[in-house]
Image: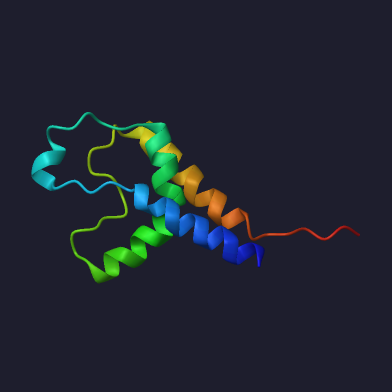
Amino acid sequence: MKVLIIFVLLVCLSGCADAVSFRAAGNIQAVGFWHGLWHGWIAPLAWLASLLNDSIAVYAIYNNGGWYDFGFLLGIGALSSSGVTVKKR
């Protein structure tokens, strides 16, 4: 039940993802760490959507480089490590 609630919340929050054309991306201020973190968290949903629609990308094209990348990797890493449990001996 807990996983279902988290999934529903993620789907609802993915509605906050932005859509920018390549032409418009050249005029937008570059995004940094916090946007990268957010995009990392919603990356699985963005990837699924990108399979259905060619205009959807998983990664922001108007990012500022290293800090965005760092946030993106932390966001992806948070998703992958949340399913790991450690048993005590």
